[in-house]
Amino acid sequence: MIDLRESARNALKACGVEDAALTGGLTVRTPLTGAELASVRESTDVDAAVAAAHAAYQQWRTVPAPVRGALVKRLGQLIDEHKDDLATLVTLEAGKIRSEALGEVQEMIDICDFAVGLSRQLYGRTMPSERPGHRLMETWHPLGVVGVISAFNFPVAVWSWNTAVALVCGDAVVWKPSEKTPLTALACSALLDRAIAEAAAPADLHRVVIGGREVGEALVDSPLVPLVSATGSTRMGREVGPRVAARFGRTLLELGGNNAAVVTPSADLDLATRAIVFAAAGTAGQRCTTLRRLIVHASVADELVGKLTTAYAKLPIGSPLDSGTLVGPLVDRAAFDAMAAALDQARADGGEVLVGGGRREVDGDGYYAEPAVVRMPSQTDIVRTETFAPILYVLTYETLDEAIALHNDVPQGLSSGIFTRDQQEAERFLAADGSDCGIVNVNIGTSGAEIGGAFGGEKETGGGRESGSDAWRAYMRRATNTVNASGQLLLAQDVSFL
Ligand code: NAD
Image (cartoon, rainbow, N blue to C red):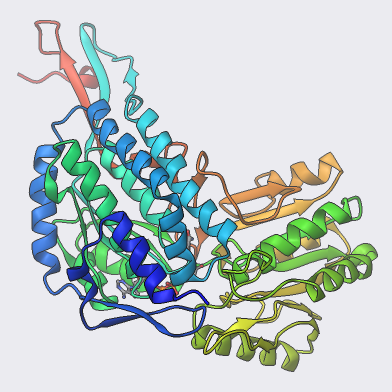
């Protein structure tokens, strides 16, 4: 029997976390058994951390971007060297199965690669000036300290999406990880500290502050934090957004999703089944992009539901340390209670739980839920709510217009998919009057995005975009420059004055 505390301690030590960081008042529990993994010290002076990071930023902003890229390159190498250690911590703290934990760490390596390339591509534009002998252009400058607030379910990837990009953009970062996953944060921070020391970059370029909501609030309210990138529930975003806006700061919000897939009569149902089971039951339903609603054409609904319930009944649920397991634990008892309450409400609304919904006794106080498929008569309030657990609601439709209307009739707008072999249907779903989400897929599930694209969603998902494409612009400020080399003063729009 593997000693989970020992395993966590070894992984932390390998990443360079000192024992002194592992004494304090915040108890860290593992969702695998509910037992204590470690205790860590909570941060008491967020303002001091921000001030130190701000001072580091003032040096870092003048370092050429490709040189900043070299730091991120080293960070990527160190993460690669410690891939196993980080994945172990992700499994122990967030409960992910091994391949998903390794996948999350791979995302960190990928975004570092991306950011290194980006460090030579922070392009501004030049525009033709209306005045002879003038040049009109834009320059992108570093922004300042980026406050990163992250959720428990992607304890390392979300940090790396923000931090790798922010660092090449010339910013400093202060990170407030979830209070449920501070160990992974300490490990990442130790690796970055090492890369910073080796690159002779300013030591306070990155600081981690540990604690709950109050620690996050101090970041949110700090005037030295021009951008708060916050990932978590819509409830959290509703509090954070207006507070940052009140001081004219910027937010990048990555909030809850209530993702759906439409399955049309022409779909390859075997391919769809595999994609749906991974998207809906994978990560025990604890991804922001987890598939929560299935909108199936009435003519194929029974066949598809049959395939799904068969697959669900065979899902290996158990310890994520066992190699055969595909569904690990929920993060804690509150998550299981929320799932049970949602299922009760669905039943009260006329829904039928076709499979799953119970608790499996696996180990100690771990909350292992059986992923559930629930056939619903209509899209009731509980279906329109994000329950962060493996519940898949099934609805049926007759026309594609009806399917798209159902699809979009939820407050959230993160990820979506359509399963079809009909190009017209696929194009309709991708079009302006199709899915209203930030991520719109064809013949692939809603979860498991690649880092090359911009990640995020609309409506109550918050509107932020992180990771690839041009998401870097959120981490910089733009200056528009007009340079007069004509030797005369020519006013725009032919205005004459003096
Ligand atoms: P949560 O909202 O409970 O906590 C997220 C983080 O916000 C934590 O670090 C928490 O301490 C902090 N926080 C909470 N209230 C705060 C406040 N008022 N001010 C400052 N900080 C505050 O979320 P969770 O349970 O950790 O994660 C699950 C949620 O996150 C789900 O809703 C999921 O969809 C969402 N999520 C979204 C994305 C995305 O990219 N859209 C990614 C991962 C998770």
